[in-house]
Amino acid sequence: MTTDPTTFNSLQLAGWIGSLFFLAGGLNQLLRLTDRFKEQPPPAQTYATKEELGLLRQELGRLRAEVRDDRDRILAAGEERARKLHERIDPIINEMPGKIIELLRNTGALL
Image 1 (spheres, rainbow, N blue to C red):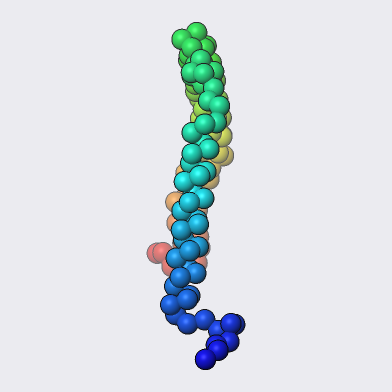
Image 2: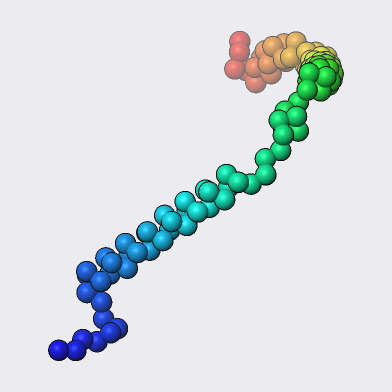
């Protein structure tokens, strides 16, 4: 009995899938092994020294102070804008009750 080589049954398909998983696992292990033998830089090149750490801390302190000054300037500018806005609005708000009463009297709604 001859079978058509282009047709697969489930057992053959499972065999191919298993073979592919086996090859993928083997390739993964091979790549891990090659990673272990790659050249590693010495610790002096990967970590900061105490002097470098001190310089970085100084720079961080300077940047924090700069950010703090910027924030304070922005807050002060906002407060100044709010003060100027209130200077313009307050006289209008203070006049409003009198104007409303006057309009109501003129229209006869308020006796």
